Amino acid sequence: MPTFYFDLADKCVFCGGDRLERVPALIFPFVVERLTGRKDYAIPLYTLVCQDCEGRFQDIRYNDEQLAAIYRDYRNEAYITQREHYEPNYRDVDKWFADRVPYMSEIDKLLEPYLSLPVSVLDWGGDTGKNAPLEGRRSLLHVYDIGNNPVIPGAVKVDRDEMLPCYDLIVCANVLEHVSYPAAVIAELAAKMDKDSVLYIEIPLENNGENWHEHVNIFTGTSLERMLDRFGIGIKEVVEMKLQITDFEVYQFLFACKRKDSHEK
Image (cartoon, rainbow, N blue to C red; front, side):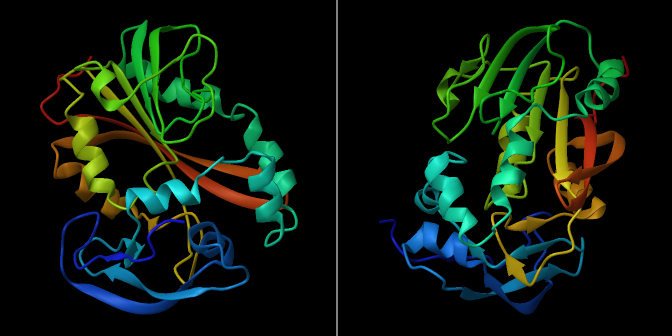
């Protein structure tokens, strides 16, 4: 059982500002059960709204042990069964995510103008690596993930000390909304970039902020831009995707980013 205490944010996890509005909110019972083993119980907390960058995030920041508990055996049968207790349609949703994303051609189209192929790729938080871009045009694919799922053929799962000093393409897709300290992730990824490297970020457009589930951060364009700027990274291009996932209509934003001191290719 993970230690049941929480770190609390006192500054914006995106831009570092301290002008934060507090709004009462709850942690969804599924996440509470994963953390504590207690069923059908919601934990009260506050949504913090940054008055500088407009980003929103829950004040509770999970430590590594707590994150491991939330994502233990991610999307295996036990996880799906447990989650269906709270979300009866979740099995159908999971089937959608089990396949390679259907908009991969749009991701490739976004990235290709900024890269010289073939590329070395680090998929940070990439699960199995199945959604890494530019299939067939990679010189290598390294996958870093806290989960224990096996990676796809041709990929290599790496720890931090096994990563290369630099990659042509770094993928951080549908990750930053989950992590407690997204700016720390960007700092780590920026250290693996040279002037020619591309950072691909994908985040959802969300309007939540009252009931927190797996996501602990809600980005705006301003919050992402200011967070990247802290580490010398700029957004080169963005694409908005509208998706239908079972009964849900969702929007994803796809960002191609480079170091601000980079030259145009």
